[in-house]
Every structure is written in C-alpha cells, then in structure tokens.
Image: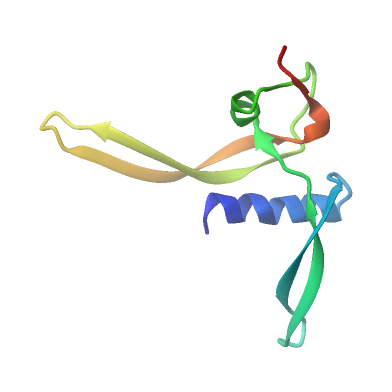
Length: 108
C-alpha cells in the first residue's frame, strides 16, 4: 500500500469518527459489502491531513499547543552511500503525526 493510500484510508476513518469534516466534494467508489458483492457508492472526500513538515512546505504553521489528530505509520525511503560508492536503499515504516486544516495558520 502506498503512503497516499494509507493517508486516504486514515482520512476516511477520521471523518467517520467525526474528527475531520467533509470537503463537499464526492467520488464514486466500488465497495465490497458484507455479503461479498460489489456496490458502487458515492462518498464525500474528507479534509486533508499533513505532517508538521508538509504543512510548513505548503506555507502553514501548526498552531502552538495543537495535538495531532492522528499518528500512524507511513513508508520512509532512505538512501545511504556505502564506502565502496554503492548506495544502500531502504524502506521502512515510520510513525508520523498528522494535523488537520483547522490546526494551522498561514505563515506571514
């Protein structure tokens, strides 16, 4: 599963719990119901969530005292050069904290 899929799944979960709001935008999705039958549903897209660093890249600052709305693992990719010049590539799960739009403000 990609980071985008992991984050999107968590956004839907947070919206179901009432932590995130909907965006007013909808998508069609194929859902497998409890009987194993595919159904097409229209689902509202939840608000975006980002890490502290990603909000900074977007020009926002997490407000002082805010706690993450969610903490979960996402894939992290690293590349380290060995002594012989080859590159050691690794992927691992790193737990990250995510913040919602109502927890950030524009950087002046």
